[in-house]
Structures are given as C-alpha cells and as structure tokens.
Length: 545
Image 1 (cartoon, rainbow, N blue to C red):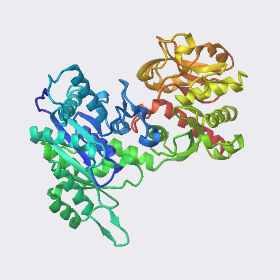
Image 2 (cartoon, helix red, strand yellow):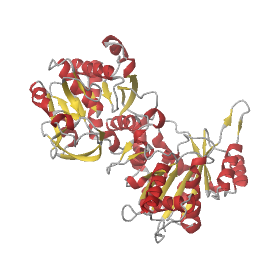
Image 3 (cartoon, one colour):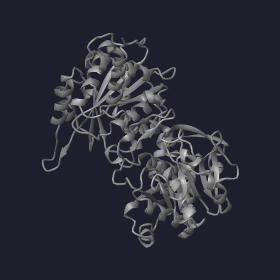
Image 4 (cartoon, rainbow, N blue to C red):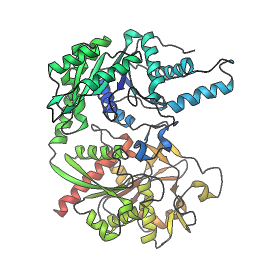
C-alpha cells in the first residue's frame, strides 16, 4: 500500500497531445521558473513510457543526450531544461521510466512481497507510479509544488499506466492537483485558417483516460484570436481563461517564461491551486534575454563530434556555449563538424574557416576518432582555443602523446585493445587488477585544482564538484612524460589519484576535462569553463580581425 502524504503540497501534471516534440519539457521548466519567481519551492519530475530502465544504453540518435544528476542517475534530456530554468532538486527521484516501474514491481513479486496475490497493472504498477510521485515531492524539505511531465503523446499505448495513476492521484487529491494539456494548433497556410480540431481530438482522448484538463496550452505560430480560443474552450470543456497560447519564441527558448506570463498562465495556475497571486518579477531574466538578443559581437565555435545529425545529442553543450556567450555579451554561433567526415588536415582547415574556438564533446566508441585527433592537433599547432569534454580530453591526451611525445601508436583501449601505449585505459588495465574495470563513473565527484592553472582562474576556488559519465581514465604512467613537455594535470580526484583536468601550458587556452561541465550551466549562472572558453575565443577572433 502507498504511504500517502499530508497534502499541503500541490501537483501539476503536464500531458501532451497531437504530436511529439512540442516542448513539454521547456514548458514544464518555464512553469517551474514562474512559480519559483513567486517565492515557491518547486520539484520537477519526468515520467518516460519506454521500457528501457534508463536512457543510458540508448543511441543518442534515438533519444538525444543523457543528462546525469549529482547522485549518478542517467536521465532524460528534459532534466537539463529543468536545471537550466529552475532551482528544482534533481536526483534519481526526478525521472522514472516504465522499465524502472515494472522492474521494481517484478523484483518485489520475486521476493514474495505481494503474498501470493496476482500482480497486475492496477493496482500494483499504478501504485508504484504514485509512490514515485510522492517520493519526488519529498526529496528535500519545503517543496510547495511538484510538476510532473508525462512523456510521449496522449493515445500512446505505453502511456496508459501513467495516465491511470494520475487519474487515481487526482481523484484522491482533487483540490491539490491540476492538469495542463499541451497541444498543437496548426495554421493551414493554403486555407488561411487556424485549425482547432486536432486539439479537440487530443483532449477527447485524454478525457477517455478519465483526466479532464484544467488548462490547455496551445502551441501555435501566432497568438490565437478569441473566436478560436472560445471554440477550444467550448468543445474541450475548459474555461476560456484556461486556454493559453504558447507562441513560437522569436530568439531563444529562454523567452518562453516571459511569453507564458504575458499569456496569463501564471495567474491561471495561481487561481486553480489557491496560490498567492503576486506577480513574478522577471526583471533579471528579461535583462539576460536582452543581452542575448543585443549581443555586442558574434563568435563562431566549431563543435567536432559524431552525433551532430541529432540536434539534441549535445543539447547541454550547445546551451552552455550560449551561456558562455551571454557572460561575455556575445552571440555564439555553433558550426557542427561531423568528425567521421573529416578527410584530412586540409579538409578540416577548410571546415574551420572563420571559427575562433574548437570544442570536442563526449562520446563512446571509435567512430570519428581520427577526425577528432586532427581537430585537437590543429588547435594545438594553430593556438586556437580548445575545449575537450570527457572524450574530448582523452582525444587531447592521445594527440599529444602521438605528435609531441612521439608515440605514434598511442591510443585508448576503448578503441584499440592492442595499443602499446594505452594513454587512455580502464583502471584495471593500468594497475593489473580485475576489480576496478567495467563500471562507469557516474555522478558528482570532487576535484582539487592547482592554483597556477587556467581552471583555477575560471573557478576561483581550489575544490570543485562536477558530474561524470565515463569508464576510461588517463593513465598516470604517462603523467611524467606529458608534464615534461607541457601537458599538465591541473585538476585531480585526490582520493583515487585520477586526472580530472588537463591543460597544455604552452598554449593560450587548451583545456580538457574528464567530467561534463555542461550539465551545471545556466543562462544566469554560466559555467566558469564555458565562460572562460568563450572569452578566449573572442580574444582570438579580435586578434585575427
């Protein structure tokens, strides 16, 4: 049985209809932002209908990036939006998949917890979903509102148990829960008309699940007129003031909270949930948007990776670069260069024309390695600012070993198990044991910085904490030789003597980090390393001009 909470908490359930990729994640994060600006403490949660236990094993082309929390959860990329827009606590309690739900219920069944009862979707699966909702709302003290985004589209077979669990939850706590249904209202150009029928059908499908929306958030190109809002209100059984349009942002996704406040969403939610109706002050956020729109200059950064055909595969990296631009009053233009399509140095040089910085992000496997090595070599030799993240740091080390230490066969054992110079390898390979390999380093780990380093200049503190997602490490057997020729470890996890940050001290700004700093960057609090990287890229562009 579920241990119910005393409901001094509020819940907002956000569903989606008509089609996917409407922006439920950004809408959820924006609502959290507005409520926090009113002085409320908010938690965010994503329910994903797929049967994978988590997205960690999914190809980025399938799912986009995997966002990692401090406690080591591999989660949906929407949690990155939650982090960038809000101060919501994010942990393993913030994301649940169908795979996790069924896995837990079956584990209990095997253990005999159900005392011989027939295990069914109702009540056992739905009870576990509701238990997770409560767990999220209690993960830290003082949470006022929990926003729960349900992945997928209403009508999907796999979403059924989640919708039923929400229906039950709302039945139990009717006064403390609302549903906001995000839908699509298309404009048919050849007819010159806005069509509300897809929204009507979507809401009907939701109602068949026993959930009647309190508000309908209409994704549309331009603001809806009163006639169309009235039609949606009438046929979907929602008050007129509960039909809110969410128009396309002109410049940036960070405009969405402003658009929603202007459309009346904040006021409508406050009335429905009995929240105090003070208007959120978005002044600082508006200033940030103006800085973004009216940037003093533009700088072009090349991102050399292998998942660039999917725009969400490096979502946090792209956003963190923009944040670094905001911190320097600059617009960052990103040039995507697919590493496996780089033919040679001349081809790379042509592709990099006009770029003032090179970033090599994380990734797994050997595809595109040679192109990334060429990018690191070009950056080192031409003194172009270089930022290597996770695999990007390993690339930087292997390139240095090959071309500066004259170890032509240097490699990572992730790609070449037979390499004579395993500059990057599993810990078990480095110390000849079998109990350290095969496990991924996930979540937040401490890092101590050398004071005389670029990293320290950026962070301005000696101890930091950053999030990881990798198996392979720099091999300390090559530390002395690397440092002798200028590639220095400037950040390390002292307890395990592991390299966290590498810097080429003979280069103006060539930094590689084993962690993922992009996961901890916000538009109002750009990550120090991205801020420093963009600053140096601007300097490089100005010198070249």
